[in-house]
Amino acid sequence: MISWARGFFRIWVLISLVWIALGAAVGIGSIVNPYVETRVLAVPADTNVVTLFPAWGDEHGDLRTLASQNVMVEYPIGDRGYLLYQRADAPTATVQSRIQEAQSIVAEYVQVETSKARARQVPIVAMAILIPPFALLIAGWAISWAIAGFRRSAV
Figure (cartoon, rainbow, N blue to C red):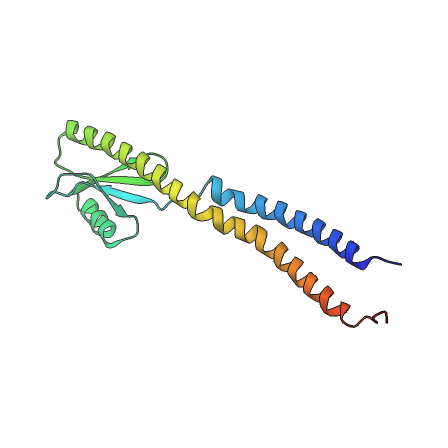
């Protein structure tokens, strides 16, 4: 006699292992190298402190306009697209110190945001990997239980 329960359970194990391996292969990228939003940095005249702004916000548009009018100068920071906007009339020594300050701010920002992004992605990837196999196991068990109700009982 064929043992359907054992055969289906083994098929479930194989399908689950393949699903987990594929899910891990796809999901590991979002954990190892998560997306961190690019920011722009500027030194507002009123605070004289390097400040982070969203790269696609109104502040960035205003800074780009000022740079096109030669009021501000745009300095690239690192290789990820971060920009520092500094007044065009700032002394060279001040600009160099601001660039170094901006580099340390960007490094800290990227480290903190990467850690946060990883912490958000781990449970998402884990649930995407583990919930479907267990849902399939529960559905299989429920179907097996329902079918068992149609078998003849030994009297």
